[in-house]
Image (cartoon, rainbow over the protein chains, first blue to last red):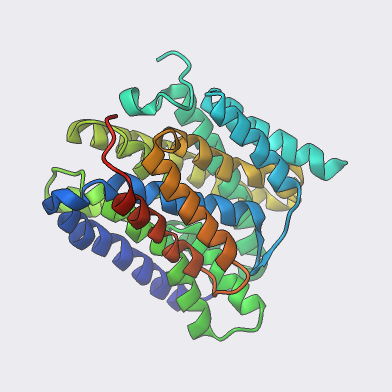
Length: 100
Length: 230
């Protein structure tokens, strides 16, 4: 990675964020029928990120300690446990599973 | 605010305990990501600048992964841009809820991440959306910037942070943040379709594409589920 590459990567990331905010966001806010997408997009996209962080290793699927940690987090979220308990429990269960 | 459970954000926004835990999560993320980046880049100043200016850990990691695998600069840059597409999608969601001027809108767009947007858009008024968005953004950046510093200057002392399970903190935090959305049938359907498509596509598509395609989950839920009272 060079300084030029940092600038090029940053330009692409900034452009996507600004396009989403100024173009996509305005379209959604002016179309009441599409307004619900504002809450549905994060549900779909963030769940995909969670799946990727839990079972992906490069471009392959890998079931390892992360799955146990996230299973614990899932149960705690379902039981409406406090946020900090969910986060710490996921780390502890994943760490312990790696030790065993 | 009293300790808040993972189902209460819609009415109240995150409390100090949740913001502290999110700060800790981004600290762990900052340490683990920047240890990896520094190993490959070899320059402290470039690692710190990349972390702050690109403002997307997944973009940095995708770029480095493609280069590690022998890919060209162009392929690595495209991979970095594609995995950042989710921030554009999240900015769409946030943009639909904002009632602010151009410069404020631009600043919010450039800071669109999973936790701050997802917590913010669960608030009822535009004013609350902004308040929760910037509070959450501040908590994330305090953790992220201190994580960068520790990862770059003390990374070799900490060693492999993954062995402590720190890499599970970020997805767990995201799950807790969308917990409230999952309790609605439309949110659960959007997440199930989006997550399922991502799972199927990970082994067969280029990096970042599964995240873009997961948007289908939101469209399916919009088209098939009636509006629910919140």
